[in-house]
Length: 284
Image (cartoon, rainbow, N blue to C red):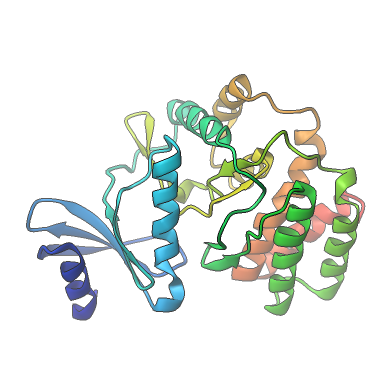
């Protein structure tokens, strides 16, 4: 960590930093564990103003304010510096953790929004995530998610024009495949293993959110992409919020397309090929 960044943390918190160690993970900014002279441990993310770390701070505060989802407390949030509480963890995600996560996310998904989207745009993996409100989930998912991220991936070489045309074709018939949910649900938006801190058989914290109001099925599909949680999670979730017939057979594939396009934009071709394969399987 640079001396300038260290001084910025000390100025933000009003306490001296005793020790610093680098944390791994994430694709936005750099993260550091800091021991403070008052005995506290914190995590500091440092970057440039373009990283918009203040948005991450706002999302964590929204989750803390509106839900019982465990998240780190925010101590400072500005475009180039985020300081949050350090949460002890590092335990494996076992069945007990999965069942706890199911209860927490089912509860989160019961939090209703006035419309699909949010009152401000957010970020996912450092990429702009437009959240302009819509009364239609089908239209929102088509325009604000698939078409937006498809164009981003195309512009940066993550997919080719042929895949983009197939994304557009799917969006033109999206209402034939996915349904309007009973209400807009608050979503974490980026639930993968690296964003789940486990301790003593429970979820100690969810981190790095990409929140908006949407269909819970898109969150559940993303969880399957990297096998974040397995059978214990889905069995418990279904007890609390039963899944409508057809999720596993067809709709999950449609909802996998958004995170795949995000990853194609960030990391390139392999994810774009997965998206192309799903589109073929859907008949596009």
